[in-house]
Image (cartoon, rainbow, N blue to C red; front, side, top):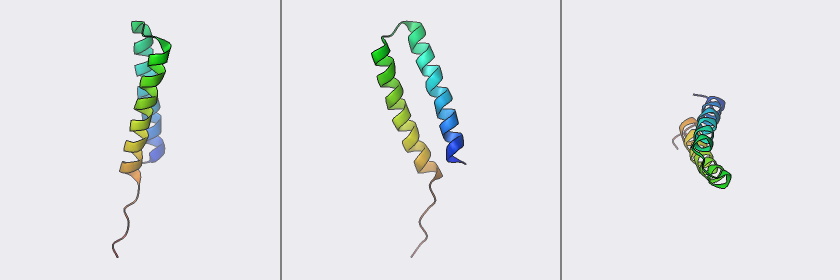
Length: 57
């Protein structure tokens, strides 16, 4: 699967999380911190799933 597709999905999920947290009345600082953590985890997951494997030597 493409790295770009993972990122688009990740951004949609993070947007939903941020919207939900703001709707609940959580402080903006905490919303930003949670979204940055989710973004970092999502990028690490996307890279690990889409990177090509090294050829055997």
